[in-house]
Image (cartoon, rainbow, N blue to C red; front, side, top):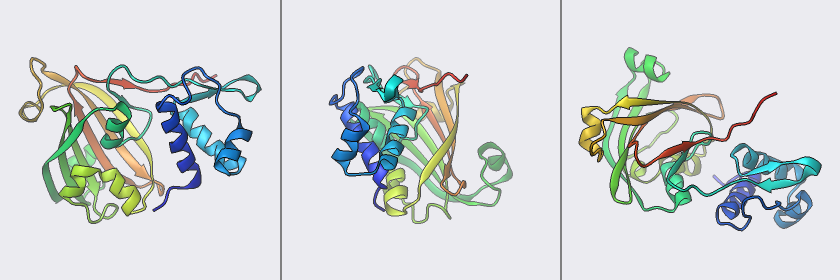
Length: 240
């Protein structure tokens, strides 16, 4: 499924900002300039700019002047405020990454799982566990549950590459919203078996329920992160 026009513009501008073409604190090109460059309407451009503002890349000021506020991470960062695949995070942070699937099964949601995940009891799911390697170290354990009716044809091979890429570009489903919760938890024996924990006995856990454009929850994820190597960043706006 091809990208929508505004999404393609957003991704192109986002990449240019990340690559330093528009450095931090520089004035962003005007709407007039950008509509000319991308040969698009102001409404389309403003949707792309709104997403850049939402993700903390640019900020509008007085007189419609827009400045770049994005700064490259000094260490690996996973954005709480955005929805990114592991593959996208790796590319943004410019580090070598690998995914290994350690479990891929099909099952039904029982009452206990339903209470924890928000998925309806009796739903058919793919139960996928993956270890994420960064610079050769096993540092993230992802536990994912996907509704089969929403993500048909999922395979272990797809899971080793990028499930979100498959969802968006092969199935044509829009991933819209994820409600997340971050905690610090004691490492389990399962964590210790699969992650290079060293002397650590706890990890950061990000749990999320993700919804598509129809408002249907199609995924529950628990990402279990080694605490030493990661910071979590969000972009917050003061409400008056």
